[in-house]
Length: 118
Image (cartoon, rainbow, N blue to C red):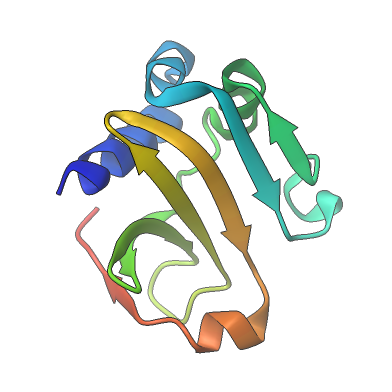
């Protein structure tokens, strides 16, 4: 439940374009690894630090939907069908330590995804 609260707050802050709220949720040394080609999201493959990660996600999660992926709080795209990619979160306490984006179709097909209300 605590992990889901943090991920839900991240989704709300991202959707709302609230950079300051994103910063409060991110560990200062956060690392984000994106497995999509950079052109797909307009983002670097690896981003380090709270400000840089917040910049990548501010106002960019409007189409994301909250989900449980293999029992852990996550976000998936697109809504209403099989996920094209999943954002997984490593959370400790009230801070996000790591965000990983998974887009490999084989890995996605092996995941148990339960969509949650937005």
